[in-house]
Image (cartoon, rainbow over all chains, first blue to last red; front, side):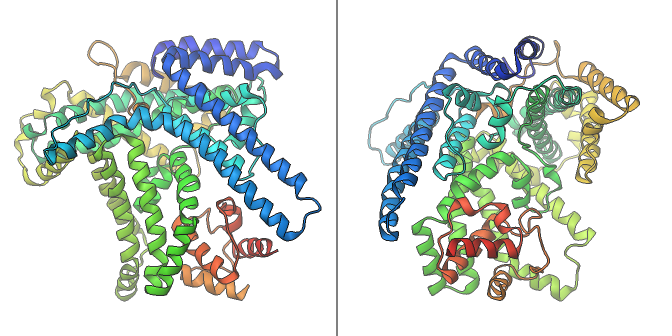
Length: 529
Length: 74
């Protein structure tokens, strides 16, 4: 069952919503819990098992952490300063053991299921290289849908409890709901307990504004997914799987189509999920903020998959940067390096860990590791050359923040991101290299003149629909960037704005959606992580 | 406060730290700059800054950073 299937929309979500409204307000969270459990069982029985283990281990560990803190708070009364410090150190060590246990259980399940074959394959590769004469057979684990999302969400909850950000949840059923809330189960956004849980447990009455905003978001997401993404996917998949047949123009077009596909697929599904949650009166964390208007790769990652980026920042980058070995490295850098290098070396090392983790999070393949390191390299080069750029602009007296330079910065970021997306899509790193090489070296007008593009399942009509869809998305993005969200005005605006836009969106999805005998089902890309 | 303003100008030159109130929210201080700043602050003020303190509210203005330092010194 996928988010775009009729079963999900007209069956599952409607039944859960009707039940939600029929139940007394204080028991409505139980309907969400039952719906979420049923959803995970329908998706995959094994997913439910993994989900329950992660949720309950997080529940018990967090509860233990709060109890330890309470015990410490009672025991420290009347102690001297030194005794308090000694007790605090002892309790901190114990608390760290509990956090480690929770992380090992949750992350352990993810690592075993997702990365076992990657490790075995690497060992086999090394064995073959050195002709060691052995090969370990690969295992046939099935990766439960959404495991990479709810695992991070559960770990974030335990770590925040350890840090004392909030007290542990005392009701195991409520924590299970937090980890498994069905709209965000398979593709995020990765939620935070203090923002999501109060909304989940508080029953919401029917609210016209929430309902209209939710429906609008769902159809906007469907428009992105079914009208734009699924069409673009045919072009990208055809060309990428057989790139030797095509010249530069078609390859560049396919690279652009894949970037469009990935964005509209992921952000479209997030809109569908956020819209579903909004109908229940629940607002999920935003995951995108017009990423293609970014002026740097760093900014792009602060606007793209926002909840993953902030998760890595809060639970990997900051703790690693502030850990004792990194603080020692920082001091050593200050003693032995120039002021500039000393300021960037320690944080760059922590950033390396983040991008290695981000790459591996996307998939168990060397391609994804290099994908993460590609962005790391761009960011580090940007930081290293910043003083040179500052000097250059100051000497040339070109306004760096002027319209021209801003436009160039946006275009440059777009090109770099498009290159990253190509690496993401290519089957192997070798293919990526060959595709990039071909995109620069095989210019021929024949591709465009003889309609090579339209020979493989896509026609002119598909290109026109994609182009119109992208223009509409661009206009919406520009308005959002200026603080005027047109989708918001559908739910709050006057009736002569609301209905034409709603009907237009619904008709566009029904008439232009890439479904029917001519089109196959395109799986959500980010649900596979 | 003057010492803090000096450190801030060294870590991120060209910003008016006396008036700017949205250092994190407006993207002037990104996570890498915050870590560079934290390394300097722990050194200069002999304080321990944990990941828990690394929230926008503590870094959005020079006053907020100063208040955090005073709190951690106590």
